[in-house]
Image 1 (spheres, helix red, strand yellow):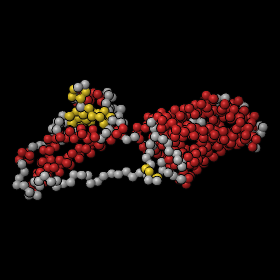
Image 2 (cartoon, rainbow, N blue to C red):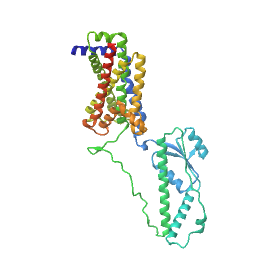
Image 3 (cartoon, rainbow, N blue to C red):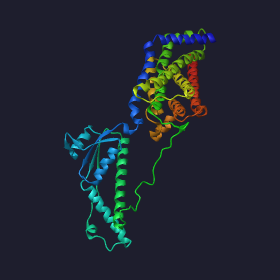
Image 4 (cartoon, rainbow, N blue to C red):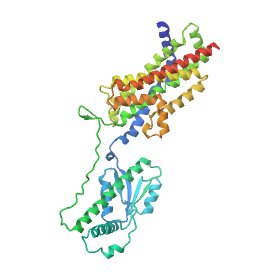
Length: 428
């Protein structure tokens, strides 16, 4: 039996050697993908201060509020505020046209008399409150009768701008304006109460936010693009062996190789075990290549280093079980398919679909509720979750046990179906 197993492995190795181009693609394509995607996504995980986005500011107010807005935007470190184009002040029409044509991501239009009208409105409200306490004789008639229309700061966004960017900018500007309004109210109360130059109201924020991140040996664990992309695209590469594996199985059936093997006799289970061992070696080579890129290449191209210290053994275990799941799926597909034209397109398309619903491209939490439920059936979701448990959550073998158990069960079920189907088909 051992001899038959070794000969099966040898046969699979010969098949792979005859398709060196496909074998190279299996190793080179994932490396190109992981380098390209990580470089593109790295800016998402960096501090926004590293990248300044040019935005247009049209200032019709030219007073205290517009100056504070401009100062706050500049100090945020995220934006480069432009008030002129080609040496001329920007108008609303010019800004609108430039943004809608995609030349700039954002234009902010500050209306006329925003500062003066806000102060007048605050004066009215403060006078009314102070008067209700009997602290003044009467309200100023000029303030009382004057009606002030609400002001509107216009935001123009490039139609191609992502919704997350829009919401972030709108929330930041809304917070900025609220702080300005609050400051104006405090200052006006100070003046009305006539308490001198010393501040009566403390204007510093009482409530603030602080992110608490996990630490190991007093060192913060901060997620980066490498920690997300290496496991994600390693999974994609591992599962892509479904295509050559299923094609080889179909070729064996169409060329009569499988019939000759079984009549030797070689049980189909031994053939499957031989395929599993051969392709599992390929999966592990893919995994270690991806890890090597993250550890040794990424630092030289300006990307964070993949930290695998104390985690490589657990990551290897996760990769091993992911490889089994991918091989089981490839064996099942090759057993069910009748031609290479069926197995290759279906295998490639299904792997892409499993990657999409498994969270390789879009995080599962960002998906609609129905897709979050569907993602639970993707073996890539189980594998990715296990990788994240090891890399980002500092999990132990017990934390990843549910995921790797599901991956092993997936392999057993798919292989069992393949064996049963093949046996019934040959019995007919």
